[in-house]
Length: 470
Image 1 (cartoon, helix red, strand yellow):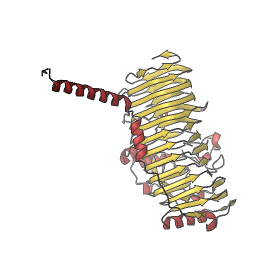
Image 2 (tube, one colour; image 1 turned 30 degrees about the vertical axis):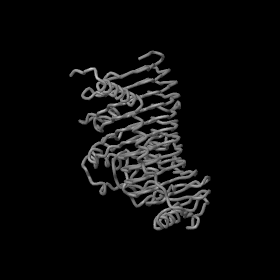
Image 3 (cartoon, one colour; image 1 turned 135 degrees about the vertical axis):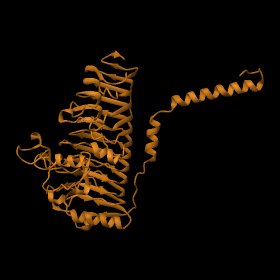
Image 4 (cartoon, helix red, strand yellow; image 1 turned 30 degrees about the horizontal axis):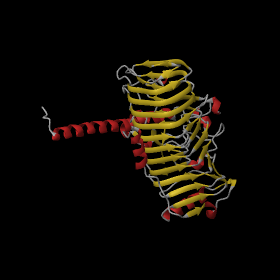
């Protein structure tokens, strides 16, 4: 095509050039984190009517010894029947069994309130529909539980104390350092995890997977199961039996300003599973296991359920002790996508990794579109970024499901002490890790800068490890 030297042609060329420049500017200014902002804006944060139901008025006694289960239950039921509002737990020590939330109820802890959960295992019966390490079952009730509810919250400046310790709940993990005595029942006994995992393989309906009394599988602390519009704000969790916050099959979950200070076995801070549109912000995680671990079912169960965890934003959080800062896996068989982590501080001699992806060929699953930006790492033990597709292989964790991991992006990361490895990637020859990018990442003090196996070449931009540019 030829152009004649006319005013119209000159105007056409000018407008075309302007369009090219405009599109170029848009490409430079639009960030993948605009998608994170869009996710946040789409999340419905529950609000509640201005009605208060004080548990004292329902007979609760703050002596730390009287079991207030019935008083709290009556307050929640009254609040729910009245169309919603706030169930108030005032300052003081209140002993209770499990708390079951209902729609449109905000359970609010005043500053100085401490909820002590009963050490009597029988208080957590009858069994409820719950989950253990990525497998659904009927088991002891979580300490705070909501099942298929809408618009629920736990808020305030008080403390939820699970009262788990080396004499209660923790010994069931089977580790001597958590109080287990050799010969006593524990979760790896044949009637516990082996039985549950065989039921998983055989697709036994969850209603027939009856555990609870006579079994040693610990309950989660706070578990919204199949819920919509969930808020946890301001509260502190301590002394958890097992995973601390476990939103499963839930949508629109906000965790804001929560402190988790719990160093028991499997004391993950927050484990979204089969969940969508999750916003975790302004939190402090000081945990006995992963700070945040995004999950989506174990093995055959995850593939049957087939609900990926997706659209998860983590920002402005502090990660202290823990196996990993932000982790995907290991129960990950339905996959994880669209994870955004920004403006976080990770620092502890007991923090093993900053960003971690863990799976194997029994789990399979996929992880894609993980974006990490503006992270300050003081020190980690093992690696800043660890991608491991051989997780647990010494426990016979090999199968036929090759994981897929791609589109992992780290930008503006400063690390003072990178631990054993700066970057550790162990993919699979059948499906190597794809499209890992490090931009403006600076790692100091790594004993070994990188160990990378079965991965496409890493994309480096303005990145240094131990002062060497990559």
